[in-house]
Length: 271
Ligand SMILES: NC(=O)c1ccc[n+]([C@@H]2O[C@H](COP(=O)([O-])OP(=O)(O)OC[C@H]3O[C@@H](n4cnc5c(N)ncnc54)[C@H](O)[C@@H]3O)[C@@H](O)[C@H]2O)c1
Image (tube, rainbow, N blue to C red):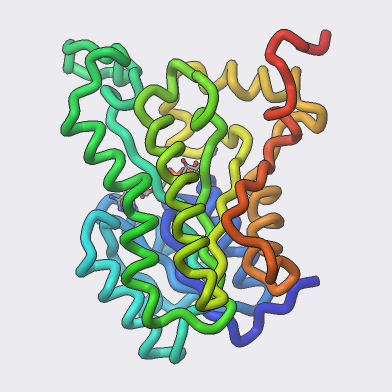
């Protein structure tokens, strides 16, 4: 059992109890860590209620739009002031509108094309800002506050190196996130700070449910992954390892928690 008492964690990306970040936050809390949660305007009420359930004081929760360096700084410096240093950071944030995700936008009145070829540059750049560049931005702001052997972790998806038509423009953000992970691992190496990413199998979170064909993806996972589909808790278990000293010499790693789906050719469907 991993003991995180005295450790300090900043978790970005809890929306509700289906969020992968929620499971990571609750596992960190259960293992004794002090946990701080960011929320957005939309998720404030839900996140504060979940914080209460987890016995996380509301003073450790703050509104952060990850496009804002100032809001990230306010959140992380509050945490640093309270605990004199930060040990763990979870980046569990992603967003792309229906143009970026190449989906019709259920109930949307927007009848403009949502084909891959038509993804508007500004929409893609905004989703890149939120989903990929924010890892660099958060790491930059956190740098002066990081304790020795701190660990930064993000969540990615295997559409970074494979085509999944309904993941659309988010794929390039995940490819960038994985690349940024390697460069940050190199950058932070001399400080002893580690940077890794977990490539999660499909979990039916609120964001994931918005992907067209979400149910087919779960079905596919069940059919072809050697270990079947995963749960958010499976990601949280691996996250605890990446935060802990058990992974003290592991950095720049892309770690699959996908039931083994990534090794399979799609044609190898089980019957
Ligand atoms: N669910 C899956 O199948 C799956 C698989 C692989 C990777 N992931 C990744 O896991 C991470 C968490 O996603 P999830 O599936 O738990 O969904 P989720 O919807 O619960 O989490 C996404 C979070 O991003 C936050 N967010 C969006 N825009 C933001 C902004 N501008 N500033 C700050 N926060 C913002 C949302 O508030 C939400 O909390 C994402 O990076 C996602 O791409 C998910």
